[in-house]
Amino acid sequence: MDRDVIIIGSGHNGLVAAFYLARAGLSVEVLEAREIIGGACVTEELIPGFKFSTCANAACWLRPKVAEDLRLVERGVQFSAMRNRVSNCYEIQARVLPGNKPFVYWPDSDKMQAEIALHSDKDAAAWPRWNSFWQQASDVIGPYLLNPPPTLSQLTARAHEIGAEEVFNTVLTTSLADLADSFFESDVMRNHVHAPMDMGSLYDVGTGLAEALSWAMGSYSETGRPAPGGYVRGGMGSITQAMASAATEHGAVIRTQSPVKNIIAEDGSAVGVELESGESLSARIVISNADPKRTFLKLVHASDLSPEFVSRVNRIQTNIAPLKFHCALSDLPEYYAFPGSELPSIGGLIMAPDREYQESAWEDAHLGRLPRAPWMELMTPSLWDDSLAPEGKHTVSFWILFAPVNLRKGSWPERRDEMAERLLSLVDNYSPNFRSLLLDYELLTPYDLEKRVLLTDGNIHHVDMQPGQILWERPLPELAQYRGPLDNLYLCGAGMHPSGEVTGAPGHNAAHAILNDLDA
Image (tube, rainbow, N blue to C red):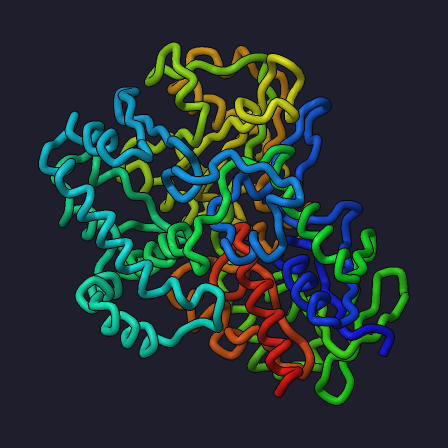
């Protein structure tokens, strides 16, 4: 064999896996299809003079152990929120209420309760109990984030061990909407929750479990120290550049412009890959950082898999995708809800006034309609990081849910401009000058995300993160342990436990599964 390990894709999880395996003494080669490393965690000059974090926006769920093991801060990665933050990510988060009324999520608990008390004293008193409830739920799941996915019986035993049985049972059997309604009386606080992960309706049973996983990813620390988070100076690509440095420091080799055509299998075992160029590379172990559908429906020959398995992979849910709307502005925009204030530009600004709005957004996506009024969160990282835009100018990026993978009428390339105009018209309701400051924009639809970053159906999480595709069932029960149906084939991407987003956890866990197998 030419090398011990080949990793397909230089997304952050592939680089994390490369680091741990190379550190253990294995010879590792990472193959990247594009000319830049990082997968969906990259910084690109999408508009001349303006740099954007193309897919991943901010570091919200980065695992503390991964950040420390790879010495990201020591390698020069600068984060905007090192300690106090809200929503697992920002130092401050703002929200626009119906009628363009302001609401602010403060990291200081007293200020937060005072904000809520403007709408309900009872809800202000309930806020600590709400946080305590989710902290207990996240403590059930937390120890398993950097371990193989837990079974339901393991989670139940863990809940019993820490005295969180009632909380965990409630999470399993109650919708997020019902939970919010049981804690809060005001519409403001009942509407403050939004569907976690790729879940649609807040009324679906199972949203509670997905929310508990979300909380665990954001609040649990396996080191006892919080991970650095928030915006990253130079954009999210600074993280993957540092991860690549950590991997190559231990001998890993990273090749760009080396798209893999297929995974070579012999006698039921992966033995290497064939590149689009025709070059063949052999290895003891092949790891796919691509999503499960791309791995098994495009990279592995169907003749090397059972028809039943291929059918199950085909049925993996990848129905929901985001829109990414990147804008270059000539100045910092104003917002009706926060006149004369930079506060909504410091962290995230949520534009989704009430629950009915969110439910309507989900219904449009579910039915394949062009979103009429999607859930939007905008970020202005250039306010903190002046390296992203020319002096005095700004970058604003929108994370937009929900978008159908396929439109019922027309296609995304045909309707991209129509969708962009619809988004700008929505922003006109919130800002008096956003449109007049707009210099240029780039709208990335699910179609664009698939073509650009090779994400099946444009799914930023590789597979929908919803009950039936999280924890012990992510992405399928037979794949949940990071091992494929072929010997010596592993998966390490966002479609694996515990989640998508920039966490490093799947890469960490896959690498340790391999090391355990080699020691067995």
